[in-house]
Amino acid sequence: MEVIVLRPEGFALPAAIMERARRAAAASGGSVRETAERGDALAGAEVLYVKEWGATECYGDTEADARLRSTLTGWCVRNDWFTFTAPECRVLHCLPVRRNIAIADEVLDSARSAVQREAYNRLPAQMAVLHQMLKPQRSSENPT
Image 1 (cartoon, rainbow, N blue to C red):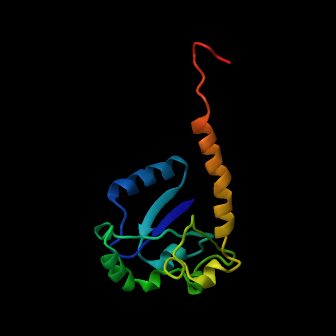
Image 2: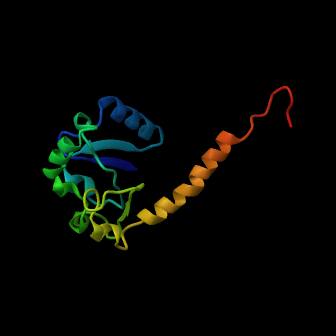
Image 3: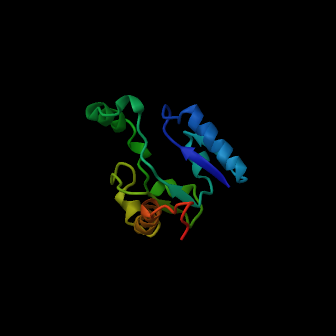
């Protein structure tokens, strides 16, 4: 399976993170690459996992972040993005989501969206992690 990270120009992931992702993907028979070319990234896609992007130089600076985002409104996932994808392509997001900034209402509230189901499924996974973390450790001296 190929994973394609689609992001605006100037928002490339750090090289060390991409290299680690490439190694992990290759170990399972897949690949990872990134691009700013929407048509290339979306061609035939069966799933869009949307995550908001940001520039590290704007972190904590609300005004600078707003200025930057105002120039990139075309990066909000809208219905026209699905022109390139597989017909049954679904959308995922881990929530919370900034409506009409990361994903438009027309997509979030459509049959394509599996966002609510994904969020609901997160609860049992989080409970399992907490259970494992809080479970008393067995002593090697006194196994039970």
